[in-house]
Length: 486
Image (spheres, helix red, strand yellow):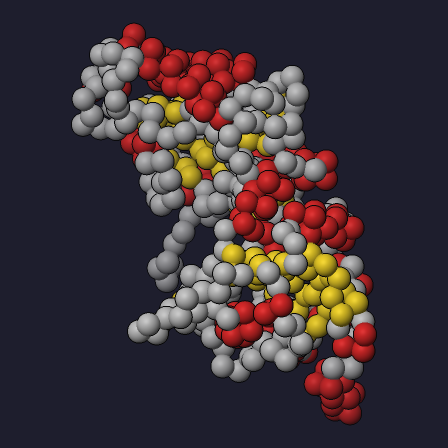
């Protein structure tokens, strides 16, 4: 036994133990898709240029605990690589490397390390990136400093500017901090801490890459649309099942947990953003994420804005329902007004319409309705009962990259009007604490739009009927939480 253990440890420390492949879903985007995305970037690059993309930083939660790592969406879009401490270079033209080799892209990734992998998980290493992600030129990140790329010969170097918020790991010469510092030195990036920083070379371009990525990521490919369909369907099923399970006395956090359990049940890796579950007045806080209210009142509404993230792609679905299962007259009036505003935008949502057209359609309906309900005096009154826009792209980010002029075919967007009437507002007190947002996800087509989140009921009578149905979670009871000796 002792001899076998020593041999195994020696193999691990020597790097001879082959990489163990974790079991994982089989429906990730293929390497060919990411390669094609890199080619699309290359086609949009200016002459004699290079684009440089960095992986996301590892973020510290507290002490020696980091947040669960999430890859930079642009980096994932172009590579499929989900590990930190990496840099990608895409060249407009073919480059000549060592030994007269030729390449038009390079990726530097974190090396295999059996000891670190034992603590923090498997790494692909250069071989894994080459075999699984389809890169030909892959090097370890600690080779970036001395790799002969002459940035001075390029007319433009495209990259996203830095926020100087990356930690340095002194034990790792190839970590993201060092990759950025090495790039700055190679590219002639100005020292912003100097008393008289030198002018940035004209070839350093921190603007154009954002335009390129907005254009590409705003229009979804068929493969991305399929990912989004799954994320949206999971989110809509969760909304529906929580409607069935909703009971007065539940807490906001319990409602959040039910949604997120269903996400995990369908193998969604994460939420696309912090879950928003606000009952009563809490629903008036647009990005309320405390979710701390301990006991829901049967007479109040609960606003549930949650989105599953499936293989990087996130949904964004909101439903507002009555905790007790029935809308009051006042609640239903506000709800139907928001629903009418959403449907007005849906009617004109198609390729060629503008984002502003959709917002104006919702605003006009809401303002007209608020006048009729005597909540505002005139339709052109300025107020905060509808304080946000109605539409945004979704994709690898919940507020995804994209252009915000005219809608184009195969954009995937939200339509999410809302009305929020906080306590102590100028409205009649009978409206106080009513907060309604209805948010759905849509695929833009040539002639209209496809409602992707159709599975979750939207109309008041449909919501009330669904809330009367039995839930698979009805018999889910836990023992009381006792902390005493007995």
